[in-house]
Length: 453
Ligand SMILES: Cc1cc2nc3c(=O)[nH]c(=O)nc-3n(C[C@H](O)[C@H](O)[C@H](O)COP(=O)(O)OP(=O)(O)OC[C@H]3O[C@@H](n4cnc5c(N)ncnc54)[C@H](O)[C@@H]3O)c2cc1C
Image (cartoon, rainbow, N blue to C red; front, side, top):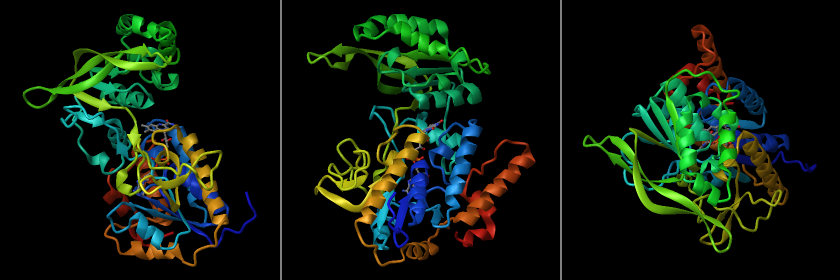
């Protein structure tokens, strides 16, 4: 790190998930004043509201690190504050307050859909909304989700297994089928995550499905036996079975539409059979075979990743990601952290991207942490190249938020909330207790809410 004195510089970091928190730490350690703005009352993002609730040890360890970051005196926390286009506080207003740089680390809050007929039926959901629900993030925590007994999950990654974990071990549904566009060798989950539900695998159905898709798998140069061995390797350390849920896979199928019964309820997902074809240039391409069939279910859950939230007001690129400058002025490890407007071909000066806001659904907490740190290094390099703006931006932000209808939460109030939830957990003999609504959280903070830290 350079010896430059960054104390006259003020940076707004939007989003206090792992990327924003570790970026804020890097900036604060360099001496800058950091306003850390977060939509949720609590910090942590998906580390708090995404990681499966029973991973207590991992979540607690992360919370401890996040608390240490928030304790840094030059980090000023503004929780319960959403930055969005058209609201009182949008990106332009923030930049107008005089921040020397704005680092966007808001994660990927949008949901990805396939645009199929029937996606709007009750009983069709995106995994992230459910993940937020069972992790007690308002307002999802209070939302009713119509989950039936026969679930079809589209996607075969770790998020599908988190949903399977919830459905098999908590809801104890009758059936869960995971749909994959490709074959068994292309599943994207880890053995560790499979261990939570492996004992519910219908082994006869798995073997029948591997046999049915053997030819297509081998034609693509893949080994069905190795795929079988990988899936079944989770049985060695699998958690004990707690329900009769039948868990199975359908490989080489592409969702085509979701079908309803006469009451407008989901009755099946129609899929098209697919295969992998080797092209003239040697590349393998997924193609539909034009044959369709119905897989009966009453709930469909899309576990196919997330997308960024266009409502934030940053320009998007052709892939729907926040656009990055193709020729960054301050690259870190040959990566661009700089926001960009593809239409005008101009940089968004002083605006940087980190974590899942830079690349949606990419990697675990460790990746987001590294990305946040690197993005902060890009910010510091840009600050080093310019004189500080002559403005007290943090004070201006505090003044602007003092009159908002929704109270903004500071560090002292956040600490009080943690104490209140810990006391309730002890009282009720639980490992953890979380309020389900912002109202309850704000009430628990009491008058400390007014004392912004
Ligand atoms: C279901 C699921 C399970 C996972 N399980 C694991 C696991 O077991 N282990 C692991 O290591 N990783 C896991 N991950 C991945 C990990 O959670 C992510 O890598 C990481 O949280 C991404 O960090 P981020 O800071 O980029 O985004 P996020 O964690 O999404 O944080 C974004 C933050 O920005 C805030 N924000 C959003 N919009 C705005 C706005 N407009 N204004 C102000 N603030 C805003 C949000 O409140 C949030 O605090 C999981 C992810 C998912 C989806």
